[in-house]
Length: 213
Picture 1 (cartoon, one colour):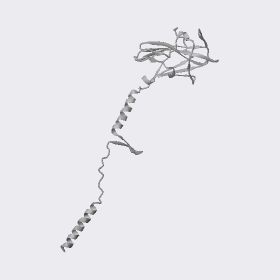
Picture 2 (cartoon, one colour):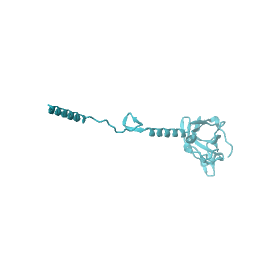
Picture 3 (cartoon, rainbow, N blue to C red):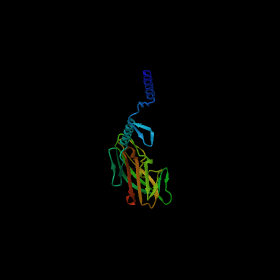
């Protein structure tokens, strides 16, 4: 009788141990913390440190980008800030310009429209008035500035380097229809450094000869 009981006990213990071996152990593998998952791509993740670095970079770029500002100049209104002073000296038409080196003559039906400016550099670095940063509109049509062999009223071109503490007088010229009515001029050369866009609007009433250079 005791032999049967012992066998039953041994069988019970054997069954208990056998079934216990089949249990699934919990996954104790450590998982990465502090991640930001992409909903559209669950397999990709960005750590909190990387997200913070991206935010700081974007903030720095925003701080380095100057706020945009526009300024208007005219024969009666100049523009000035801590770095520069700009004024309009005159606006004049020329049907022809003659000199020692030849004659400047526009196409038939056109005239040269010359804008005379003075720019004073009050900053600590030299300024370059860039011809590729200018744009103009004549009665709704785009106009490209051109060049002259001669110097109207003795003025040189304004497209030059201006040293700190120095001022430069010069001209910009466009070939426009004789019967033009409205002329718009824009300069964006300071937009990247100061956010400044310079604008001017003229009509035939604004024609004025500058003083001789």
